[in-house]
Amino acid sequence: MLLLDIQIVEIPSLRSRPILDFRITLSQTELFAALTNECQAFAGYLLSTSRFADWLTITRPYVETRSVFASTDQVLDRLAAMPPGARIGTRIGANVDIRFLDLNDGRPQAQRWRRVPYPNNQLLIDRLREGELDAVLMWEPALVLGLDGAPEQHGVFPGSTSPVVIENQSFGLILLQRDGFVRVALDEAIAELTSDGTIERLLQETGIPGVVPD
Image (cartoon, rainbow, N blue to C red; front, side, top):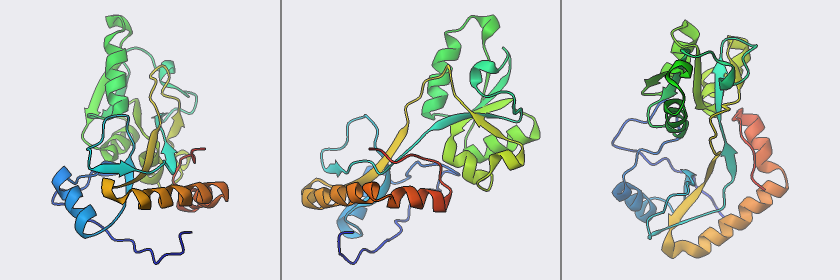
């Protein structure tokens, strides 16, 4: 799109990667070193509402993903349908875990669900299918890709996290602040790839559930 020779490079980390997750394991120092020595733009970065380091600049988002509720009962289409005491699995520290914890703690004791936290999304899928959990709240791409792109064929049925309200996760590219002109070019490229349907096609081809932001 930019008529440039784009090279995709993988940036290694000293820490193991989270399983079926979007978290980047690079420290601020490692990220700065990567953007200084190995690449000009780092893709797959969560564009949260928190403040960025003043040496970073960010592009517009190119994809949005969501968190979902999932159970092995096709009739249950949302968290609100679960009876009190149901075992609800979450990944420790995930946004949906924090929101669920806040909402659940605010309910009367007799109406609360049982929160069962796990360290990664693969364990959530495994424990749900084994029957140790009644339902899970998790990142949708992890659920879909962790079940070969077709959760329903494995007896797992996604639904709504309601009454837990969780914002979508938007992803873009980050660059060093000094590379603002490159960011502008990437923003224009993302806009073109959005308008001509390329990003939507790539999502379909890869099986990643998500929407392309306007």
